[in-house]
Amino acid sequence: MRVESMSPGARWWYALKPASWPKVLVPALCGQAVGAAAAGRLSAGALAFGAAWMLADVAFVVLLNDWGDRDVDALKRRMFPHGCSPKTIPDGILPAGALLLAGLGAGAAALLAAWGAGRALDRPLLLPLAVLALAVFAAYTLPPLRLNYRGGGELLEMLGVGGVLPVLHAYAQCGAVVPAWLCALLPGLLLLSLSSALASGLSDEESDRAGGKRTLTTTLGNAATRRAAEALLGLGAALWPAASALADRAPPAWSVAPAAAIALGFRARLVRKSPAAVTNAFAAQAVYKADLHRAIWWGMAALSAAVLAAGLTGKGAPR
Image 1 (cartoon, rainbow, N blue to C red):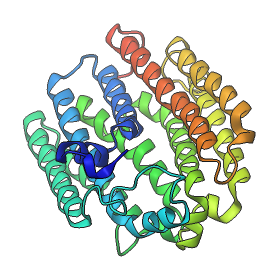
Image 2: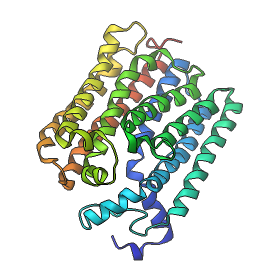
Image 3: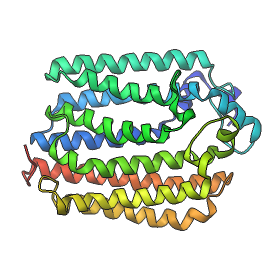
Image 4: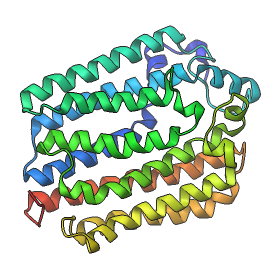
């Protein structure tokens, strides 16, 4: 890619990283589906809020993450001048100030959407939950906490992506903060989100370490992180049918079994590709993470569709 030939629109589109959006869009979709199942109907207003809030939230997260990581991204560019994709700020695609202002504006838009939808849908906790979602990210990457640099960033990502996002969107649909089916599914969602968070650090191992960033990869190394991500992915997917079998107020087995099978099938593929995804093997790491993301995103998408069908057809969703 030749940065100097990019149009302003192409620069912003690149900065928004649309390929990464499913990481937050799919858990939000899952929350909407479980909330609609709990309510026994699909709220168009809640769906509209979910779409507007997620677009603003994605922009907030992606743009401010690049702003917060600008120094370590510049370090990675110096360490690997030809080994990684263009970096938004270090490679001059957009200036740091523009990303900061646009990211903060997107966060304000997300809060405004939550405030308006809270009033329109009679969901008084929608704005506080939206504030919590943005605060988790702020603690992750922004000063003064910047826990992604101090240690614990992966756990915050697990909490925000696998916990707060589904809760926020389920509440928008049904008015219950944690409906029973979501309570049964949350442990699996959290573990899958943690698996993704751990794998995210693989391609930045040496630059993160040189920049003083504390992640599981910089602390324990590439191989241990891959093993942990694979174990969490398998356990998280297995928890969905386990919850169906063991919990009284859980989705029926037929609605969770396909999702678990999809996730575990892609896990088997990524385990076979794991030995090649060693430190600085950026192409092999990209292939490895692609299968991990397919396991999570396609698994959650299948889960959302089946749980929604179960709830709307009256197949046992608790009210």
